[in-house]
Image (cartoon, rainbow, N blue to C red; front, side, top):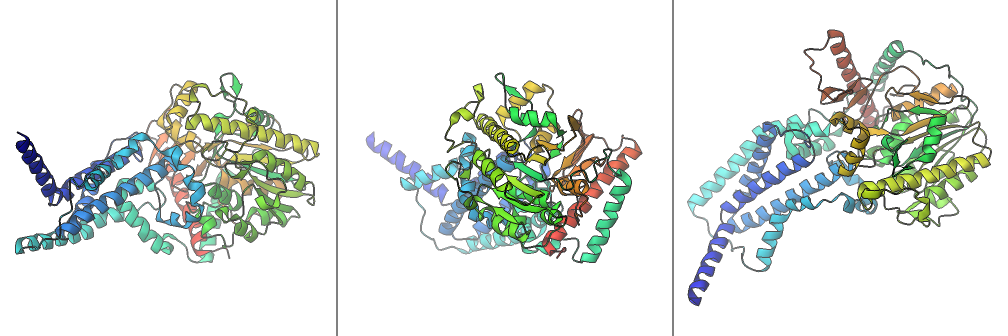
Amino acid sequence: MENKKIIKKEKILEVANKFFNSIWFPIIIGIILLLKTIFFYDNTIIIRESIDKNLVIGTIMFIVTFLCVICVLPNKARTISTIVLDILLSILLFANNLYYTYSSSVLSIAQITNIQYGEEIMGTIPMLIEFKQILYFIDIILIGILLLTKIIKIEKKKKANWKVNVLRTISGVVAIALFFTIDAKYVEKAGEDPYNKDTQVKKGTIYGYHISDIESLVNIKKNAKYDNKEELLSDYEELKDKYDEKYGESNYNLGGIAKGKNVIILQLESIQEFVINKTINGKEITPNLNKFIDENIEFSNMFMQSYSTTADSEFSAVTSLYPMENGMSYSRYYSNKYDDIFTMFSNVGYDTSYMHGNYGYFWNRGNVYRTFGVNHLELKDSFDDISENIMGYLSDELLYKQAVEKMKTYNMPFFTFIVSASSHTGFTLDGLQDESKVSIDVGKYKDTFFGNYLESVNYADYAFGTFIQELKDADLYNDTIILLYGDHNGIDMYNEEMLDFLEQINPNLTDVDIKLNYIRVACSMKIPGIEDLTIEKPVSKLDIKPTFEYLINGNAGVSLGTNMFARKDFISLNNERIVTNRYYYDEKWFRRIDGVEVDMEEIPEDEKKLLEEYYNDMKEELAISTSISINNLLK
């Protein structure tokens, strides 16, 4: 009996090893990779949609191509290569899944330029990991265990007979044929929408997208419509003249009202609009921001320009151009000549400064703001008191208190751009010395990513309150123009706790509501003499520089945004999304009021023409902006 068990066990091991070292192993791994890729799609680009059959077919074609290449190899190399392919593609899918959770965008090869910020970026990863993501690696773990316990072994190279050689040759020919025919078409499709990565993946598969992305980076100048400054400026002026004629001047008589007054722009880390004037367990989440916004001008539809970084938000506010995604405007194109907001203020006699509670190397800010010609560059090493750091950044409270002290020494009038950081992604408030400065009880959300976010926002609001009081105590508040806005989202688009919170406020929440919530940030402006005003039309970071051009009678140079007090009724994002008073564009047009897709064949002709005009204007704005960055056309 014992011998029979041993023989049976040996037989099982023999079959397992025979399978592991046969052509069936890469075939099974290929099927597993297909399932992993569909799992990736289902958790990212098509969270609330159905999978298009062309996306599945394209994915199958790429995986078959990979397997055909592997099958050209002899058996030992084939087995090892199959395992390596499984590991590499699983890591690729997992990394894209994590980044999509973080920014609602897939990774780009261009982000290799951000490797210098790895420590800060890595700190957010534990917050993004979900248990279900183990599915990307469960087969790899199993294979690893079987190899380590020597249940299965990789056989030594065997001498191939002529039949095997013929099969290898056929595999190689099929791989080449597939890649240069079917796969190439998917890569081409992925390159048709250079700004919208979701569309690129849907059209070209995740594998076609990454090949197209590499091609795009290698031949990046091909992404620029303009390589001639005169031609670019001619089309730019034509677009701006069209906007001036169509949208005209503002309904508010504010031209020149800020001239000679001090100006402060405050960029608030991760402060989304949905927290404003909201309570949790009976307490306001942002009492100080609520008071400021209620007393002054509220822009209730301010949208972030990019699905990416703080640096991208700064770039849009400072230059009124679309950022090159993934922080590349600051890491790669920082030495370009731009018509920036600091120069605009300097030209009318302002003393300019930039302040942030991190060191100059992060997002290359030291080089960037010296290139912009800022008079006073106040980074972490220029502040005397750095005794309280939250997640590595100078705490907002210490930043604001010392910012006011520095402003008191500047020549009048001054223009100061301040970037806060305490409510940065991670939201742990690690380093906060007095926890009583968090005044809310998040209840059932305690120790969740969303709950931590609310607590961080509440602390950021506390610090903002101290900032306003410090300005008042220094007699710098009453006659100063202050603009504040959130830089980008804090919570991923479909965070379950956040959706639960939003649905308590709006039980009829649509997918369009969710997508707009993701990109809408808090925004308010204080102009002495203007009280309790709400502007509901869409505005964006691109509109900040031209707004101050209008308020100080300055000259902003090239700006793709428009004055926030003017009547322009749409804004665009750098990933080909559009927000208007009534509509939202994300590959298709949707009505904002109910989230229903617009049937372009049934709407009135003038309405259809208007939507087409929005789309064409968006494409032209992106073409102008991208060309300026890639070819440095404002030098």
